[in-house]
Image 1: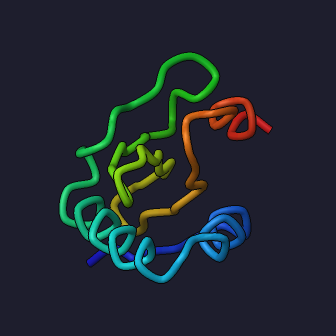
Image 2: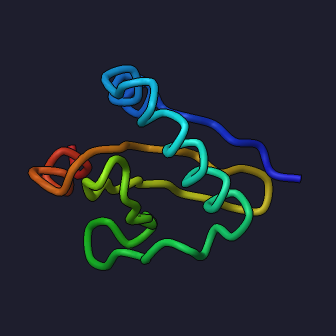
Length: 89
C-alpha cells in the first residue's frame, strides 16, 4: 500500500481550482494511484518525474509526480504553459 503525498506547490495550485475541477482532479489522482506508470516518464533534467495528462473541464492539465515502492509524491499541477520551466525550479 503506497502513501499519497503532495508538495506545498501542488497544494497551492490545487487550491486555485474550482469545486467542479477538484472532483475531476480526484479521479485523475485515483488513476495515478492505481497505475503509477500511467504517466509519461520525462527525459533529461526531469528524468525521475512522470507527467500524467488529463482533461479537467475540457482543458488539458498536467500532473507531475514521482513514486517508489512506498509512496507517490504529487509535485505540481497546471496547464502546459510554463509547466516544465516551473517544474525545473
